[in-house]
Image 1 (tube, rainbow, N blue to C red):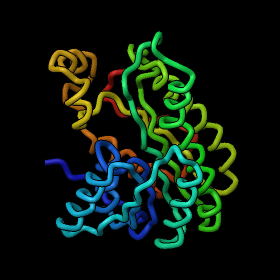
Image 2 (image 1 turned 180 degrees about the vertical axis):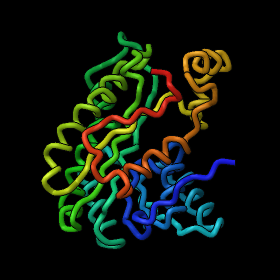
Image 3 (image 1 turned 90 degrees about the horizontal axis):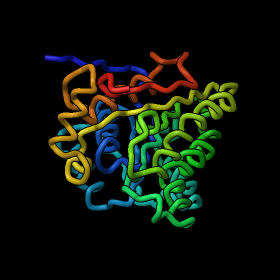
Image 4 (image 1 turned 60 degrees about the horizontal axis):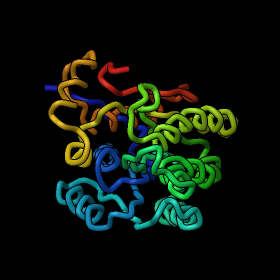
Amino acid sequence: MSQFARFPSLRDRVVLVTGGGTGIGASIVEHFCEQGARVAFLDIQEEASRGLVERIAGAGKPAPRFLAVDICDVRALHASIARVGERLGPISVLVNNAANDDRHRVEDVTPEYWNDRLAVNLNHQFFAAQAVRDQMRANGGGSIVNIGSIVWKIGLEGLPGYLAAKAAISGMTRGLAREFGADNIRVNAVLPGAVHTKRQLELWLTEADIAEILKLQCLKEPLLPSEVARMVLFLAADDSRMCTSQDFIVDGGWV
């Protein structure tokens, strides 16, 4: 039976996760709570998010704080980040997880839809990082983890706006790492592969798709949200204190 690491540096650390109500984000929230961190998360899915809080509290773990907010509304995003700092203390860890991978055809994309893809998959990551910088600086440093994807490396069909945004996250990560380094703020990206979330299994991953992906992966097991969450924990903890400006791929060896 596998035994996974506990990170003493994460205990009582204030962590903010965007898009933390379901999928990979929910697993990230749960894992930080297990580490004894003080966790807040943002999401627009209120029912699922409140259910997550209840499940975590019911399991005897420190319950996270949920704030209902549309992360594409930059003013609301900034206000929520300020509120978390006021209620829990200065944010030390930001996990930019929120995203939407709806499929779309090139011929159907309008300028409005394209801008929306960037807003929901890229823009909020920058503005959240912008907003936490002062809190992290005042706290002596911090860690920002941007959730990207390997999709732009393999060039999947049917979601060019999503690919463009996820590729940009890697470039933005390197730029912010350089900008924030003097403040002892580390910025890294985690690039998952085909993660078996409820959404992916219901909407996109067919049995044939799963079989083909397992052929391409070096490790012949389904990729679960918990695998991504554990990489995020490492990058948030002091154990990774000299890791910044990097992409960390978690895909079972697909790319």
